[in-house]
Image (cartoon, rainbow, N blue to C red; front, top):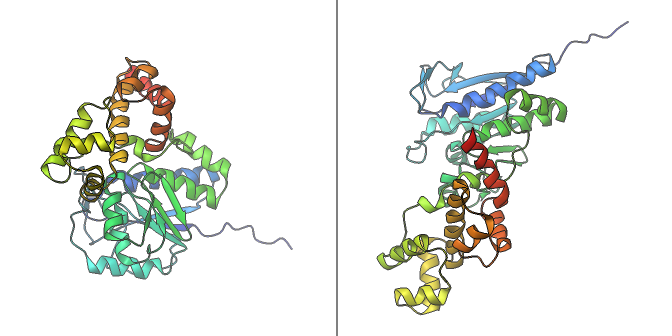
Amino acid sequence: MLRSMQSPPPLTIVIVAPPGVQMLDVSGPADVFAEANRQARREVYRVLTVGTAPLAVTASSGMRFLPDRSTLDTLDRIDTLLVAGSPDLSRAATDYSLIDWLRRHAAVSRRYGSICSGALLFAQTGLLDGRRVTTHWKVASLLAERHPTLAVEADAFVVRDGPVCTAAGVTAGMDLAIALVEEDLDRDIAMAVAAELVVFYRRPGGQLQFSRHGEAAPAGRGALQELQRYVAMHPAEEHSVTAMAQRVGMSPRHFARIFRHEVGMTPAEFVETMRVEAARRLLEEGHETPKRVATRCGYADPNGLRRAFMRRVGVTPAEYRKRHAHARTA
């Protein structure tokens, strides 16, 4: 007698949308899972959105949508629980009822985590403690400061650590969803989903290529702030510890200690960040050769710039310039 060939029940993906949610944190992964269903020719995934009240959720863009459930409901048979991000989460007060709901429902989920700044919310459950995670580059330092037991990988698009799955900023939620599709189904379907949605199957580089460190306000006491502005304006000059210490009237040893304490990085790390930021601007404009860019940004040769660029941005200067050349001619 032939056995029944019934398909397994769909995997329930729950995406929690806090007030002011970034709409793409919800719709991006949802579209990936929906496309995976089409590519697999069966209902592999069932996506449920959850709001903090049985009312319409207003996104950061002003768009409104009605979630499938609210945190007043108790759900069962959850496969994957994800918390979406919001531009306001870094300032939002703790919602203890939401934290408790997340903690209880993660306990019955196969895997759980966050998208974008949703990590700031999910980390309050304690379920990320001791885990490797990522989040939007802009709040990575804040997440590490608030939760020092976390290993925050600020440059990663997607991080998996046991049952924990986290994504970087906004569109990286799609990167995470594609990675989960590959894990659940196979590489071919994941690649087909990426092709259909016209996104990278695996994005090159890291998310810090999209950050703008040079736009951060100078930190520390007045003299250090003036020095930071000077370095940013004159990246080609010599900026050794000795030279910078002399400029602010300190001994090199005292300067290095004070700078790291008040600015949050070593003088050498700061100088490299400013030089790479200056190089990024020149490469985006596309008027200078790589050799000329290296010289204007304080590097003796293009190889020095290339090494620093790979450390800070995750791609080579040539790749970065090519990418922005396409953007200029689009």
